Length: 287
Image (cartoon, rainbow, N blue to C red; front, side, top):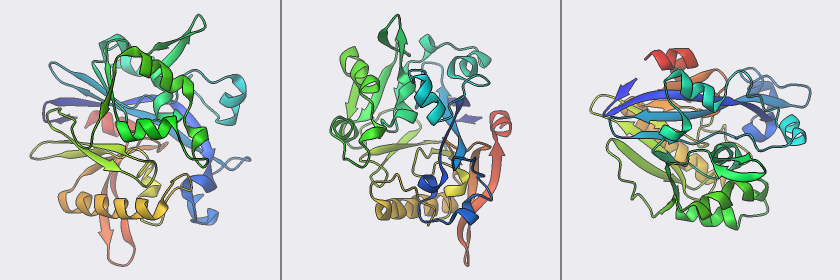
């Protein structure tokens, strides 16, 4: 896919699983399990999907997946699987290595989005993308260092401290990101100052939804995660984004959907916002 100055690739970094009830909040299981069947531990399969933007002078990665730092116990709890797909293999398919990444845009610092930015080598933590500048909102960074009791388990020091000491972390204020053909949106329902990114030109817009709309199933307004700090705020933010997506025919990019990388959105007067034409991983990479 080409949008503006960027060739765009879906980067599959693996899969994991989370509790289906937590992923869909107040939505009854007999509804969500139709599209997202649960295992015997009530977990649903989820992707760990990043987005890569390649221009003549930049190779930008948005988010980095869960990484490889978990021990066997936590790997089992979260059903992490990186044997079939992982970051290095996905980059290699398009002729790239981690050293080629020039910039990393961080939606937020939860471990399933930021864990892939660091790894252990001979017992020491190192940056996965040694030549890249890493961008996150300062408000999100400060929250990650001092989270609430509700979400403190989502932020891991081993993900944060190597970034802090690297000299390659840039803390953003408001909407100050300056990359051509990329527009930044700040969201506050899931976690403070989560960043969404819209890659755009005069004909096409692709919105990286992060955890505002983590899967295709989360397009309907009431389908909001129990993980969100402020679900009513999430509802307002989703309504704004989905309204724009329908009006301007934005393509939504899903970080966690196990089947679909992206989808258009339609509005039904009786049923509200619904998925429109959707694209599997292979479909998206062929657009």
